[in-house]
Length: 186
Image (tube, helix red, strand yellow):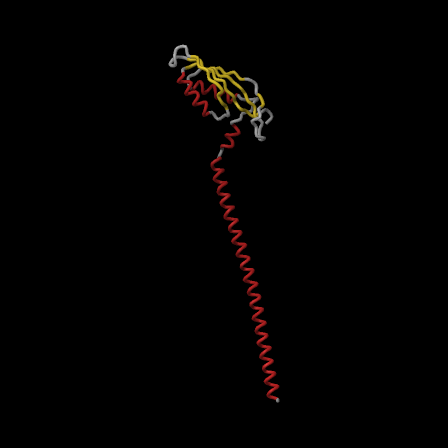
């Protein structure tokens, strides 16, 4: 009987130790799975952050490339619209170009007229002008090539050529043109 009690007690102790071992193993598995879950979540967050960083880096590189292409062209664009109350640099450019191409020039300018071409950034005025040039037709072609390269928003509306001595002789050339300028107060 004493043996039966001891063996029952031993069996119960062994069962308790086994249950304790299972409980400890369960706790170890639980904490380990929690750690694995946290680590997996952390890795996923790091992957997402790396992906976002990679996309931002690509966007920044694209912006740098675009800015390199723009360079100083934004300044050139701003300078292409002289103020409509001071177009003397534009007129000086026209006169210098005529002199360079061996033409005599007489420039007449009308008053600025507001236009609806502005896109909300700046208000634009149209300034009509007329240039009377004296020279050869070949000089006129050279003049027009130089005119096209001027850094202003200007255009030719019409050209009239009077050439009494033929194309090789002196001609009178009248150009009706327009300059787009920044409206006063901009």
